[in-house]
Length: 629
Image (cartoon, one colour):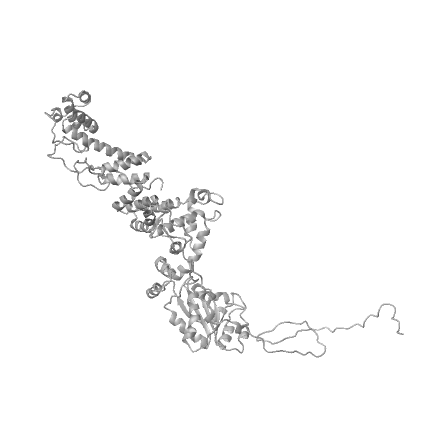
């Protein structure tokens, strides 16, 4: 039988006295360590079992043959459709020198730095050297490591311990990797001892700030091999650019303006995205329209600097200008023109704005990449018909050459016009007329006018009147006047007046008293009554009482000159009425004369070949966009 359990709580265990000790310090200075146990007091034996050495990080660094340029931080370019993310690399003049330094660094280690201004192509050029230089030297394919800016680099030697290279440590924008925990002179020396190449890029300004003096960064850079890269491309580099076989490279050659090629390629997607997003009401909707106007004008063929007056006129034709914005309010109420222009011209990335100021004050043009991307983008809308019309009319008024606009307009709108699109015909008429090809313009206007387009009737009527086809001009101008085109009223009235004068002259010379009377009434001018008196007398002597009354009125109001006081014995059929603007007595010509050659838009002669036309009269009409396209 077992013993009963003791009654009551168990006794307290004996107390243990822990001797005081110095505080434990967890720190390691320099070098590397294997397994470590840290404890205040250890009683008894401790056994540590270790297996094979852990696989180092350097074994996981990727081989450069598996890398793309984007891994190195090369900026993406604009991309549409199935285009690759980056166009082919275009060789720079410094490539042979850089390739030699990188190849040597893969064998011996060291620091190679590519310097240059912002967006000069430093990253792209150095990355290409990293990807290709090893193939020119007797080394294995290197592995590469790209730590993030500010990352601790001090453990890199431990990752490389006991491993065979070659290795590349990639430090883009080296200024972000200098200082404690970054690249120091001591770390660079250890990496060089391990024959590790440190390949870096650095802006010129940052390099100059860190290179000189006695700072830790200066000691790092003092042992670097540097290659300088310019923003400006040489003629040889531009020739290679033209042979690149990629549309983006071709666009860079055509549209970069005075900027560098890499700057153009890198800025393209940034500017495009900023501009597209600016259309929101809380952003810069009016600035967006100003830039869109400049882009569309370039697409219309006006690639030179354009005056602000043209941008102002074009940006008003877009539906977003006056209509309520789909989000809140209209563009006009959201942003002033001054604020819109200031936003559009503000330089981005120390390089360029969306609008680039021209050589002449008050002129601007869209940055080239925006135009090229608009042309390549399938999602970007075609140029509005109203923009084509404004591009011609306002540009011509500003003294710009409209010929390129007409050429671009033909390419864009001729297919629509061939299918019977009336508006396309009208716009083509405006473009070709303003470019000086009035004959082609007449054909385009006629196609639209014959389908009842009032504006086309007006334009065609003035062209016909200008070349003397008065009868046909009247036909179209009467349709335009009936449609409310006010400039047709005056021209139409002048044509009817001049034709009436012509036929009344024919009748008066044939001896018709009614014709003589109405001709006198028609040509009567204050201060120039001599010719009217002549025909009034001819009509009065033939028994026209209205003519007698008119002569009596003239006798009361004026004194007739002596040469006008003698009535003609008979109306001479050979006499014809001269120009109404000519002062002095009439000199009857020996025969009916044709009007002298005059500039376009002068009324020269009637349509019928056997009917002589009236004297030419200038028309003040200028081609203008129809009231409604």
